[in-house]
Image 1 (cartoon, rainbow over the protein chains, first blue to last red):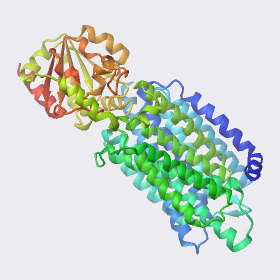
Image 2 (image 1 turned 90 degrees about the horizontal axis):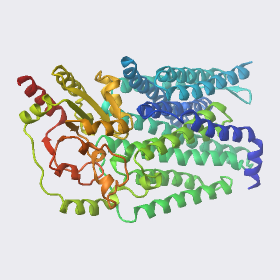
Image 3 (image 1 turned 180 degrees about the vertical axis):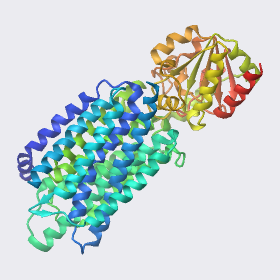
Image 4 (image 1 turned 135 degrees about the vertical axis):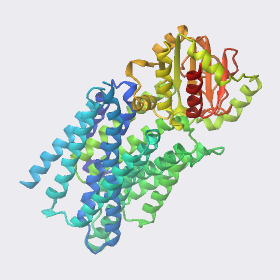
Length: 102
Length: 473
């Protein structure tokens, strides 16, 4: 318990970021028209692909002899990239079709 | 210098995510918002690769990193470009699962790393917070991955709805078990064997599967949106793990926005999230269809030539598209019919239910693809006014969103859901492949009403035949 409390104190900036981001996330999309629900979901899907950064760090820090870490890390980079690239491209394709009509 | 540049890169990344989400929620700026977020993502990724330092050490294994990025980019771009617009909800689910799996893999490698450090080198206890972030990342990421895969399979028809009595109790028990084991693992400071860690992984995967399996296909949009926000939180645990602000803001933003979006979707169906997740359609399907079947009665079919006649001599026709239009890829044919009727002086409009298809906005995207003009699309409230002055409503593969039971039958599972009140029109033509109930698994009284007539067949085929008939008149 003390460990967790200590960690909380050491990371209080992060905790503040989390709390503010929660409110921001809710506010920012608060008035989205239902037409845009699908593209928005897809766009948000691409943004959480930011997890790729963790994968890159894991990959970059793996010892060259540790094959388990290398393989899992490599897989993580591939999957994370899929999430990011696929997410943004699909979203753009959806929105491209909306654009034509304007 | 490098590190402070990285801070700047992360700051830019975070700001673009916020701006991107903001712009994505307005029609005019949506596309630009997506591109801005993508640009921010590239800056954050490149910054991480070249500038990241941990205790003075830069990242290595560049070949592996760039190899992975390259493979992921090629596969991601190709599959995203190739996917048909109708299969798009599946695609979002699939990409979401990839993100979840990525978070789970990171946790595995970090746990492995931690164990090596702890037992081989120092012997010092691991900070509870670090372990907590790792275990949470594993649990949430795995649930999101397994759940998304099931949702993906369900949407493309590979996995059928499946539930057994007491499944929800088992699910809750499973979740409690996972949480208890995770608590124990963290409490012990990771000194227990990795057995628990991998058991948590397996149980989370099982939970993810059981969590989505009993939920009906009609509720998949809600589930995907929820899993989307799960993955966001999983990404954020990575942010805690590496003290990485951009992962944290990106992850939490999506977690919060995704949760709100989920709730908005539930609201469109006039149900609570709990109702969607626990009171799944699967559970009371048998009872509901049994009751309605008895009062079913007879329906009448309409021939193509009659349908063509009725529509071309109408003053106003409203088309109600549903999932059937999407599976049949009939959006272009539908637009063709619309133009043909307009040339004959018929006023043609579309009525879009907020949850028609498999995702909110699904129909708008499809019809936009077929060049249907924006101002012909009516949202539910305006459409319900329009029906009163409409001669013919053509329902194309929609079912539950036009089911009057949602207004009149309190025992119906969809009771209270706002619907398109097509029975206000003078005549209703329903195109369906068969009399089989829709996704909610309940009978539709609309089909048995005197003013309704059925036009059976695949939506695209039926529309093509209809167009040919109208041209003949």
